Image 1 (spheres, rainbow, N blue to C red):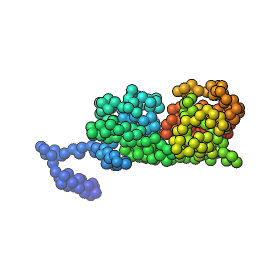
Image 2: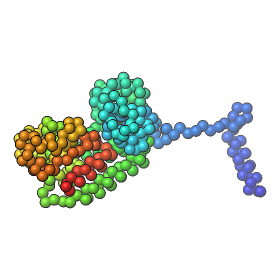
Image 3: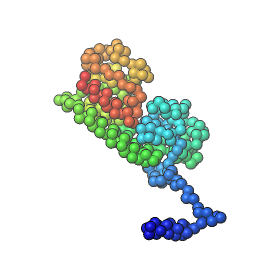
Image 4: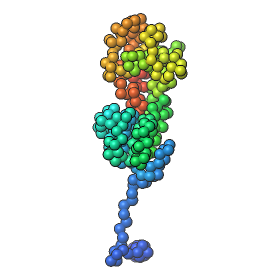
Length: 303
């Protein structure tokens, strides 16, 4: 009884100290603004004072990352090439030449673009619309860094860290299962039928290199760029052990179409049937589904 009286007296004292509101009523505490919890957040040169709730993603990789870290509900629009996940709010916006007026009409509090779009970026910034640049990844670490940046800006840092750990663990597990070879296998990676390909200096090339594969385009050297175009004669002479087609969907290329190309019948990959079709979308993005690409390539090395 004594304790109850003391407790009652303490409550009365606290309420008195707090003061009464108008007409003797006590003020009701307002709910905290959770959108500002943990903010401001700075990533590179961009600072956000609150959690963005109207995100426009003009990068397929960033779209996948945002949904993978549970920030999908904050995304109000994505570009025409963002087709994964299927419930992403796809629009006709171009990620390469965005209609700034259309983007601004969406009232975004964050726009994610792949690279500096020059005038478009400048206009968005003049309109006080926050813009995050996510350049094409060159390594897996670039992918992990962008996941972390998006996690920090959107208020999903723990989910981003969890995704990073999950991806790194799964990829490491796959890589460990690839048996070493006395001679590295060589490959030709086709971006389109005009023989544009990748070197080991690209994001895709770094994945293949991690799995013990060497691009036949590496001999072109840095002056030829990271995405050189090979000549038919040069490709035939390079005699790749494996061929990966990243144009099976866009350009309808297959083992059958490749096999009948003039002179290709002498290529080792053609003679042994080691021609592998890749999902164009997965092969062209640097996001959570990179794990699927790693698994596909690793399985091909065992074939």
